[in-house]
Length: 183
Image (cartoon, rainbow, N blue to C red; front, side, top):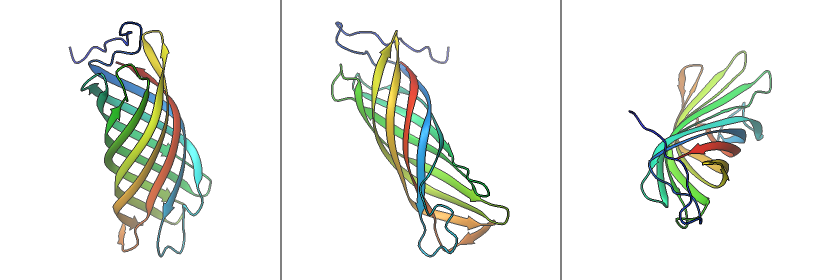
């Protein structure tokens, strides 16, 4: 059997037991902008808010630390410009105590950001660092997890209409959402 999630149970009635396989799927909103020194047409000159989603799979290292792979995506379309990002990260989720439902999150990964209109497609691949906070609200044996994340990028490469550009577009995102979480 690949993995059977253990249920979140109380430790002496005080809080959750984080043990074994971890799964979380959520959605919400994100506000994205980008820095672009030297751009003449800035597709991200203002923050754009759009739909965002997250998927995490991993396992608990202890009752205070979870390690997971995380996929997050964002769509922020304002015709005639269509924007989207996709990121893959390795994240550490830390709880201040074994009974805490509040957590801090930190991770590193890679992101692809695309902005396009009828004439131009701008694509950036970059490294990503993220940090966040959240809270697990108990729902039966599982949790509804409220979260807020910040993603920023560095060291990117940008292509304009499939040609490598000397100008690098580096997106950043503020993300809020609600996830269903199972241990």
